[in-house]
Image (cartoon, rainbow over all chains, first blue to last red; front, side, top):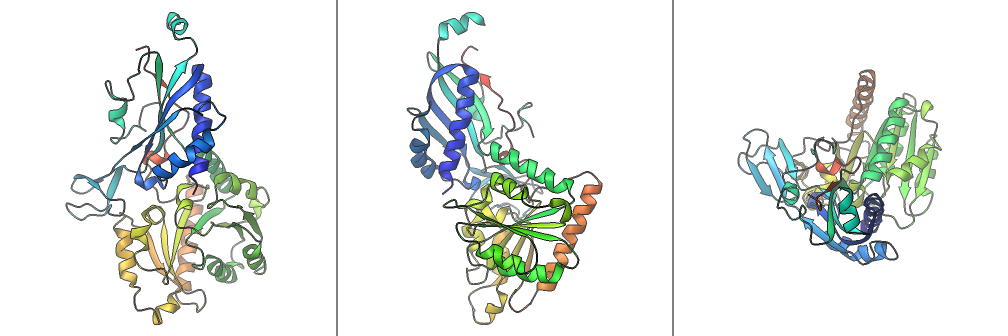
Length: 124
Length: 281
């Protein structure tokens, strides 16, 4: 149940981006979560409104992209999508595999509403 | 790993930020900012700082993780009895409440710092950092961090340790690595504890437990021990001594070590945010 502290971390990172980008509101926040990250997407969704209350992200939507577990075998080179507890190569059985995707816990993107988009455009 | 060259963009997520990908597009009047920053970056920053503290003082830091009651404290008591004349040891204890475990460790004649986490189910790098300020690292060789008994959350938080040990007591069942892959995948050593009970438990197969660990593409060492009866303790002590020696060799070469998490894991990425603003493109 560390999802609430993760949500607080999300809010704190989003706040920094809002300041850097001089945005007035946050439309949506997109995360990339892999099953091997140790956080549950459903629990993050539940915890998010509590962490977001009274912050700039209060009315923003939390979008969670759940990424697949993908491994690549160091021996035969086969790339396979697999289960979190089956990380050996399903092709040749070797357990020297590389995790290509599946343990991400990333703030992927935020969709912001700028304070004055037309004025910003003129500066470009 | 850095954000500068985009190496934190994995094959799993790169489609999102490619031209035409959903994160590269912005709806009218809105700005989509691609970040790809690790949600753990604040914790990981402090963890790196902790690791530097340990390295600076030639200390080996070991994180012990397991379910509650699998014998972490008993293992530490036995270990301290065997090693306290050769190494200067301290223990950081994580529990929700009470000083009980720290007192057990202090009874063995070594310093112990108790962190009571309240309702938090794991230790994080900040808590360990605060505890480090109460220890005199210059006077130590090994710091054991006994994490909160929990087979889920502790795996997600780097504390600055060099090695992870995941204990699995034989009363818990040999399928635990398959059920809790996240915590067993990051172990440098899986230690099967309470093996004296194997005499009466015919349903725990140590070979199966190891097979389930190997299914996680883990090449971690597997040891068996009973802190109560002393079986296998000599092997465990040998393993520890090897790790202390390896730490000294690493430090002489100016190297450090992170636990058994692949170096190119996206989970470990994320330094300063790298912001692409696609709205005006």
